[in-house]
Image 1: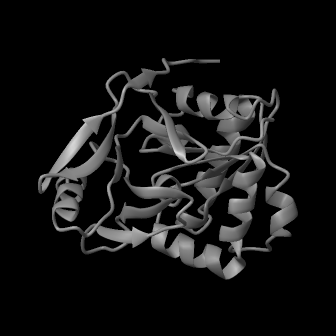
Image 2: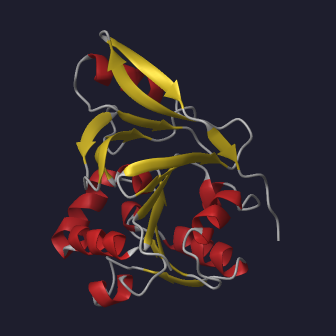
Length: 237
């Protein structure tokens, strides 16, 4: 396994939504450089929902992985040794605000940063995408979308489900216009943005038309800069 720091933020879809399209997950696994990678699922954002955990194990076992998951609502293992023994860490979707609060209580934020610095591939979908940035747009609240301060491993902001949930795009535009959120990235379902170190390396997609954008404010108006996106194709095994 290489020592470069890597984060792959997925906008939506993934193994639970598209179990017959493993292209994105195979891309994530390949970045570890391991032939039989150890991958740990962190399902905190759904309160360790059992069906989500079973879906993870079933999917990744089929693709040659040694799987584990980190329980934070049952008997929890010694976190540092458990996580630093992985090749890939995959964070699931759900309630980002509650997830980050639980992580902070367990000191997981610091351990995840150490894993990143060690070259363990950090990845995730939705909540598991925005958590790595300074800020994210979250639906953790029932009322409306809000800006949430996140871990800050990566600079700027992130919005998942940019095409999959109708309020995402206008909310990001409004937040930028009102200077409520930092410039950042918008990621459609089926797309991901791959960072190496502190820099955006590439955008990839498991769906033919899925896209990602660099978002900023230009002359007082929100600007979407489409990223060149590599279509990964549909791979079946």
